[in-house]
Length: 316
Image (cartoon, rainbow, N blue to C red):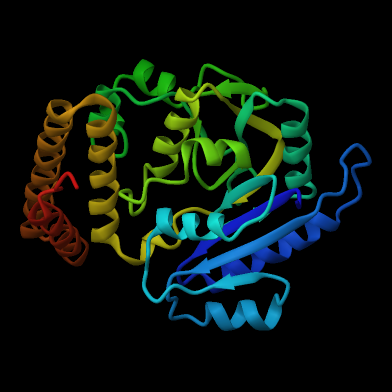
């Protein structure tokens, strides 16, 4: 069995994916850190019917990569599960295509997991493209967190609540046990996946890594944030292509998560609050447009928020 299987689900991110694969290739060959062993690895790209030439690029520039092409956009969760089913590694890394591996980061993560058998999943330190640390470690969200986080109300949320959720009370450079790490780069043990299964395909996109790590924690494994391994994450390049659908999928997934772990009543309450939030945003943007302030921007936002409201944020 090889050491590591790297699963990348791509959707119209050809240039970013190319850079990502080059960084993986360079990192696996990086012998600058004598304390890090060489590891054997495979890379599996699952491409969800990209229209930008991604499959051709992978085949031509990276013939050592295994390319899987479903006949439709299967979503992030199912795409990763397809890659996991095809993989052979002792460890599996779910990696976004809009990332760049820094040096021997992947080998460092494998070495850490080898040395800590109770750690079920591991997340590296994520960096922004300017080198600053990107928030990537979390405590599990409460309902109050869900009301505010990633909505227009986040700026007025109680500071202590967000500090707790984003773990701002802990040093970015500290190796620590966490509730979960964001899904741009998560490495898990094969036996963990066999125990808790892969990602819940009911989450088309968003919150799937939160749900997965909730299940991993409930099964008795530790989740670790490991800043000695670093990966640059550019963020949101696939979801940027479909703005309204991004809002709908993000909030639907949030509601689904709370229904799954906190019950139907809590999920219904969250749905009502989120829909009221979008209704208020629509009214504000429409009023600004009527007053002549950046009308094209306001019109686009009104259209987006109206699509979200029409969806009803159904708890699927």
